Amino acid sequence: MELCLEHVSKHYGDNQALQDISLRSGPAMIGLVGPNGAGKTTLMRIIATLLPPTTGEVRWNSQDTRHHGGILRQVLGYLPQEFGIYPELTGRQFLRYLAAMKGLPHLLARRRVDLLLEVVNLERVADQRLTTYSGGMKQRIGIAQALLNDPELLIVDEPTAGLDPEERVRFRTLLASLTASRIVLLSTHIVGDIEAVATRVVVMRNGRLVSDTTPAALLEQAQGKVWEAMVDAMTAQHLQRTCQISALVQKSSGIHLRIVSVNSPHEAAQPVEPNLEDAYLWVMETSDTPANG
Image (cartoon, rainbow, N blue to C red; front, top):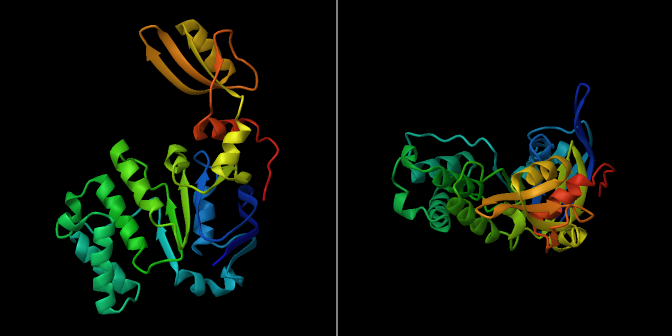
């Protein structure tokens, strides 16, 4: 299986939501990261055939999805950022209803629903109404419906927004277990959501692709550019104005800063190993010249 985008752009009048995006992928977990408004959702809707590109092509196994979108939709699972439910239904009823809408045969649908309720760890509450579900449980029902047809391409858009830390970890672990034989495209502005699971990181900014690489290569770019320092409040305020701060923690002994900078930002600063969020901030800081690929 292969997903290929070639020079995809999307314009709304004078507004360029996407500009000349190209990428190619076989089975992988791709983390699509960037700030809100970077164009991630627009790109995912185009890939899912919900929105046509203004220019460029999206191909699935060499077939242009503009003309052969049904081929991709048959093997697509999609969890949009705004996922609607039917609150009067139970989790099991909801999945069976969507399986019928997807055209799954009756017996296969029942088997898939029972299997996926187990996969997303919702068997115990499967016969409770969706109104009783927590945010994390609703997201897990969302991923279950996206997997009903055992998709080869799974698209999930900001799946951990609004979840507490425990639910976020559980959801990331679930996604990581699904990547063996499919392409998973995970869009998020929370870099920590992809740090442990992505095999590839695609960074977007202002509708452009500014980096497409592995987590290890992204970390390598930030080597020697991350610092930690314990400073007083006045110094912390100055550094916040003049430097890229990736973390700030108030402690009894002062303010602990983690700073992304090509040079030592302060006499008290000590170099430290970067994490993926540091590396992402470094890419964003140095992405004035886009590198589409």
